[in-house]
Image (tube, rainbow, N blue to C red):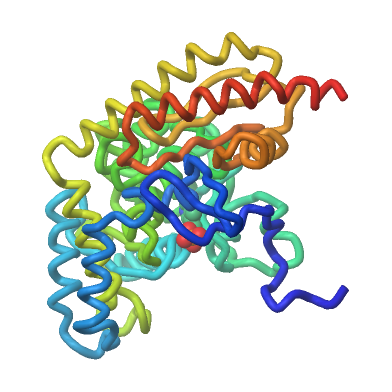
Length: 398
Ligand SMILES: *Cc1c(COP(=O)(O)O)cnc(C)c1O
């Protein structure tokens, strides 16, 4: 077989979406799916949200791209709104999550460089982490499946078990720049950092002059019912990568930092041709308009609570495959028992019950609905999930 025109790096399934309507996707043959994957936590407002669609259409007709050679009223506006609603004093816009992580790594290194500690280059990261696919981002995880064949990787990373504060602190030495961690691991299996872990990392940074870099590409931007996942922990990071939900489907990411942490990022140290172009900024503003509406995040929390309750109720009825519920807000996961493989169950739900979810590490089914779901969608989801679990059993036995 000759190689396909589309580089065959994804094991793509048979669902071929051609249209979206709110919380549903419609395939090539007209079949409908309840979309509790949201393009992997991206379509925060579902599909075809009129405010987002209009903002993008209007901006495309007005001005799409000019490069960063010129002043950016659009970028200044969105950056100001993000600064006003986060720990950050400054924002660098990217086109993806991994570029936001890349900027975070560079910002951390430059901080120590301009502080007269150029030897502080190592970021301590965590087992099962996912930070994206650039050379920098794959260097920041110790998952072999992402690294094999791409070495030599970027030096300057050390790895500790997630949620093991003592192990992380034991790695700190004179070359440490800080810690980089997903506040809630997504791809790794929807594992929330414990309070003691996240707060302990913050404290260690304060004591040793290190930087706390959070990767909230997946768990940030309202997904957990707060604007940022770190708000659940009563701490603030120094640097943070954001993407996925920030553009609602338009490719957009951002690296946020405090003034102190960003002090090395001066003229000429970083850049991007597309990053923060007017079209992306219009999409970002439209998303923020909706997320910052009074009551929106409360809605996410309420839907998250309802989803959690429904899942907790459902699980004992199918304890041949379901083990436990995890996650926060509308970033939920069901850990399956060893008798079932999450990837197979996700395929089963998709192919036989018209329900889209995402597999994650640790044999977890990830549940990432649009943030605009209503109770009726949760009811439909639970019904499909229960049916799926009921008829999946014979398939396992067979
Ligand atoms: C998805 C993800 C990334 C990478 O984002 P891309 O847009 O695919 O480059 C980085 N970090 C986390 C936590 C993610 O979930």
